[in-house]
Length: 251
Ligand SMILES: Cc1cc2nc3c(=O)[nH]c(=O)nc-3n(C[C@H](O)[C@H](O)[C@H](O)COP(=O)(O)OP(=O)(O)OC[C@H]3O[C@@H](n4cnc5c(N)ncnc54)[C@H](O)[C@@H]3O)c2cc1C
Image (cartoon, rainbow, N blue to C red; front, top):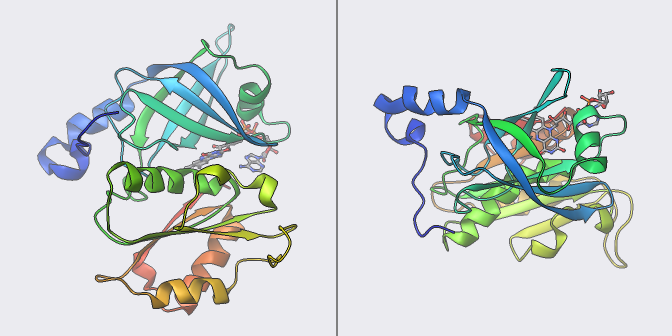
């Protein structure tokens, strides 16, 4: 872990944009060092990437697998780890039924295996930690939001941050052990006794918006297309300005 975090130059010094974009265009070897099960369908894969230039919470990367015959498959994955975890990257993958890349990770990959990555990508969904953040995610859509939560903790930031996360049930809630007072889980199929089962509703979103920290919330929504639409409608109905809602769609 490093003491200080320097944002990638593309966000800090416009004159150096070309340097950072070049770095994101270069494929780098990522060596798998650890696999951690999060839920029955999702695991975290930790990689050593010694030359990684750094990222901001919320960004993603492009991952490439290449077969012995030269066939290659590329997919986007959000970065789960915070920027402070220098030289390492963690990804959390859902096991998609019949999925080429997620299937390989969940059934074949072992520590020591090497894949290729390039990034970081997408400055739009990044949260540098400089403004109040209202995070709303569903399923593996919580991955980039967790990087923000981890960054917030690693830096001891006092800027307000809230996470509303939807999962089918407690056993499907990715990172459940790590959540603290900033997080409100919503369960859509089954829930512990005394907890209501159902979709994310205005009744959950409105009180968070009513808090209105100085400067207002920047909202970050991540999940499937349908979830992203549902959550952004709830936000707008509760008074969040449309131009302060950032959306990442996995679908
Ligand atoms: C910006 C971005 C960030 C992403 N971050 C993550 C992440 O952090 N974790 C993660 O698990 N995924 C993430 N994804 C989704 C990821 O890129 C892949 O689409 C996913 O892993 C499936 O790839 P696959 O090769 O296993 O399946 P494929 O071989 O591509 O598809 C197999 C079948 O599954 C269907 N399918 C594909 N993707 C999904 C899906 N997400 N849900 C349900 N069915 C699907 C396809 O239509 C097809 O029928 C992200 C996508 C984007 C665009």
